[in-house]
View 1 (cartoon, rainbow, N blue to C red):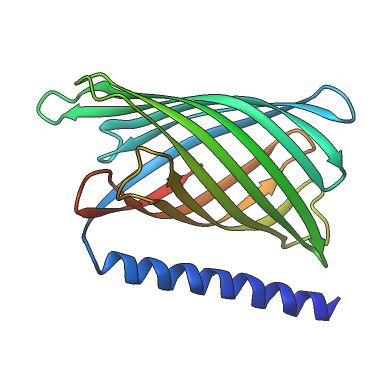
View 2: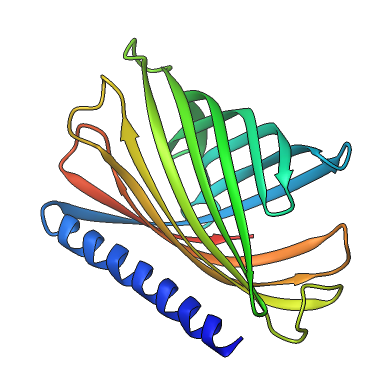
Length: 241
């Protein structure tokens, strides 16, 4: 078991080191801006059978010390478990971005995004660490409500996630755990000219499994995003609950 634990540590540290180096080199080419946000997200899974699971999640993102909305997200899908550690999923999502008026604290939807998605999830148990690899593709249609510049593109995502129980060997009821993840987002499609890199998210936090139906997470998210058709990088520092 110790041998596998060492491999896991080297694998995770190497992955984060490579990602950090790439982000550092990339950000040197453009100026950067920072934003502090607070994300609240709820995830639900409804088991239909031994093979089929209904998925749903929704959330809201706030900024400027909770004075303004940044975005909302609603997503649903269905998952098919091919094996105990391998599953496929498909679904759809609605994502809205908000513009804000600081004088009267008004918020309004400026961009609507309708999204289809497909996912492959592979899970591993290495000693007491639950490791997951999530590969997701998305088809994204943007409706810009402030202009007629609607567009469509594709995005690929890869997330490496590690769940590490702290007070129990396994993830059972009342287990406190560490949650560590890194996710890379890449754009592709005929409308993508300059912003092949979309964003990178580094996530770290703690959680508790209250029972078999309820888990609570408190995470810190640091993301580096390239804004389309711009010469700057947006660095988001987020609290994700």
